[in-house]
Image (cartoon, rainbow, N blue to C red; front, side, top):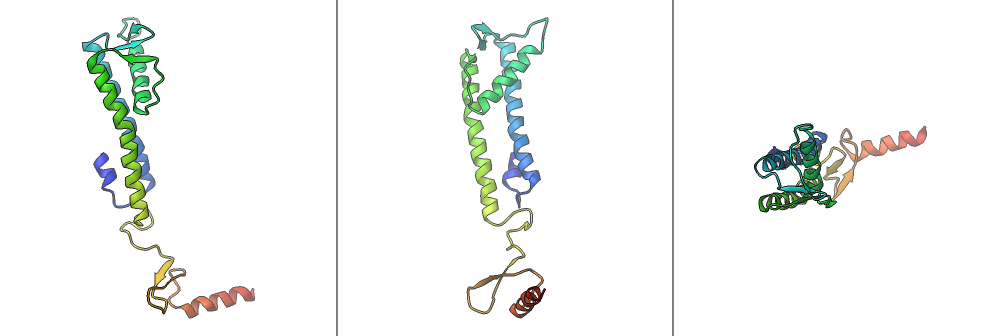
Amino acid sequence: MFNSLVRTDYVSQDTIVGGICVFLLVGLCFALIFILTTAFDPGAFVEGGRPIVRAASDSGAHATTLLYYSFVTLTTLGYGDIVPASAIARSLAATEALLGPLYVAVLVSALVGLHLSGRTSGSPRGEASEGIRSGSGSPGATSIAPASSASPSSSSSRCASFRAR
């Protein structure tokens, strides 16, 4: 999924929404890994001095707590209310804390690179936008004119008719 975002031909609204979805999916995957970690090591995460464990009375409470912890770690916010206590929990948390900013940096740089190369949703293969035409008479010069105007004379006649109104 991430590979298709980076290798896209142009930046569109779908590309941006897809990037956000991948970011959220990374946070959700780490939350599931944290839940599995607490299943095998009940003292892996500690909140307020107490280990986060699955309680029989409220089996979903530890999952929502670890989901919260996952997104706090992914965004490197780090309130400090939940602490990884075991070695595996600390290494997982450090990995997630590294992946969050790295993902944002790579995605944003890829999207900016695509945008600067001219491959936006209006021009899928890096072609110049319709309003910019080259070859206006002098070598290397470009003129800005609507795509429908074929010559500078038709452009100036349009300006004359506009002034006449």
